Image (spheres, rainbow, N blue to C red):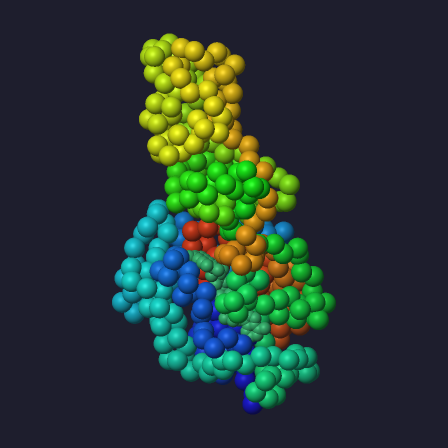
Length: 391
Ligand code: FDA
C-alpha cells in the first residue's frame, strides 16, 4: 500500500492534519493502535471538551524553544476552528472568559472531525501498531501489524504520556530518538498534588470544597479555584501551578487574594474587639475551611485577646500558606506532558525534521505544552493544519 502521507495517531492533531492534507488532494492514511479515534477528545473538559481559548497567544505555552509555536498559532487561530465547528452546527458555551466548550458532548466535536476526514477521503486503520519505521530514499517505509506501508511522509501525532489507559505511549519519543532527535525531559503537568499524611488527612476532611486562591511557585502565579480532594489538592489553581512545580518545591497559597490579612485583622481588632477570630474568618472563607483553619492553627477567641505577633502569624497562614506537596498524581491523571520532542530540530512552518522532510511531528508529542483552558487543543489544531497544508 502506498500513501502520500501516513499519520500515526488519530487524536486531535493527527485528525486535523489528515483532513487538511486530504482536502489538499493527498492520499492519507491515519493509523492508531487504539480501538477508537480521539479518546482524549471524548474525555476532555469533563466530557464537553474545552476545544479552544479565544485568547490564545504564544505566552500560554511552555517550551525550551518558546518561539517555535508562534508561526502555527498565528496562521490557524481559534476563530478558524470555531468557524469549522459552527459550519457543522456545533453549539458551544464560553464557560470562563475565552474558554469554549461543547454545549452538548465532546462526541459532537469528534464526530465533526471524523466527518471532515471522511469527506476529505482520509483512510483510517485502528487497532494497528507500527513495529518498524525506516527511511526509503525520498519516502518512508512502515512495518505494521497489518502489513507493510510505503509513504511519501510520516507524521508522528502520538501525543504525550498522560493517561496510558487512553492509548498514550512513548512511541513518538522513541521514533524521534531513532532518527537522532533530542527529547527534552518529560514530566506530568496539569496534574493534582498529593500530600503527606497530616495534610492529606486535613485535605480529605475538606474534600469537595472549592475556594478561589492565588498560588505561586517558581515563576508561576495563578488566581483560580483550589479544590480539596480525598487524595490532596486539585482544581484549576493546582493544575496550573503543577506545570511550574518541581519535586521538593513548596507552594505559596494566598487564601485571601487581594486582601492584606494583617491590616484587616488589626483593623477588626480595633473596631470590633469582641468579634471572634473564627467569625472573622467565616466572613471571608467557606465555613468549613474557616473552622478547619482554627482547628489546625488554634487561637480562636475574641480578637482583643490576640497580640500583634499572633495576628501576624495568622496573616501568614492566610496570605502566605506554605505547603510542600508530597508529589503529583502522575501520568494516571495528568492532562498533559511537559517536554517532548525538541523543536529545535523542526521547521516551525511545516513541522518537518531538518534534513528529513519526510518525517514530521505535531501536537503534544512536541516540547510545546499549553496552560489549562483550551490551549492544548488549539495547539493540536494549529500544528495539525500547518503540517497538513505542507504535505
Ligand atoms: P492525543 O493524545 O490526543 O492523540 C494521540 C493518539 O495517538 C491517540 O489516539 C493514541 O491512541 C495514539 N497513539 C499513541 N501511541 C501510539 C502508537 N504507539 N501507535 C499508534 N497510535 C498511538 N486540552 C484542552 O485544550 N482542553 C481540555 O478540555 C482538555 N482536557 C483534557 C482532559 C484530560 C483528562 C486529558 C488527559 C487531557 C486534556 N486536554 C485538554 C489535553 C488534550 O487532550 C491534549 O493536549 C490533546 O489531546 C493532544 O492531542 P494530540 O493529538 O497531540 O494527542
